[in-house]
Image 1 (cartoon, helix red, strand yellow):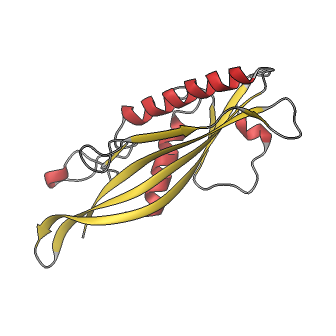
Image 2 (spheres, helix red, strand yellow):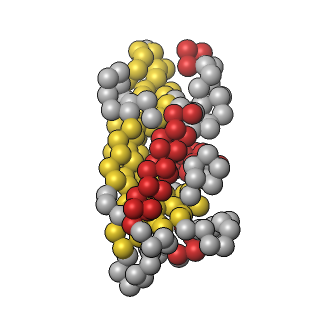
Image 3 (cartoon, helix red, strand yellow):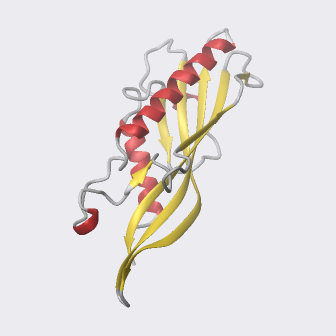
Length: 183
């Protein structure tokens, strides 16, 4: 597979949970944008809805390690991608505490959605010793036993300059995405 396929699969899986399984999520962007229109935070929401969120995906490091000995022409490798989900949660309430509470709700739901499908919605296409897994072998499960599964760092709610009405929480959600590649 490739970085592009992993990024597309994660974006598609997260977008499918937008607004239902992941409250306040309006859009998932495979790459960070130069400019995000304010309306993109509140897509398909009723008028007067106060909270909206977007996620930008970033694939950082990529590492490979041999998982099986297959002789001179066959074998398997574990490809590990460091996935960073940059989450921006915005709230139009007059109290910043409301934005903080909505950010907690959003982040809890996001983590639960990651836990709900460790293959990120990819179809089970492989056979043999890894049967039943899609091309994303797992995510949100750590790269090795005892390793970190999901890491979240959320900042304080802050009022955006110039608006005076919109409060934003930025949160970084990090996890490893593993792929089993024939190599």
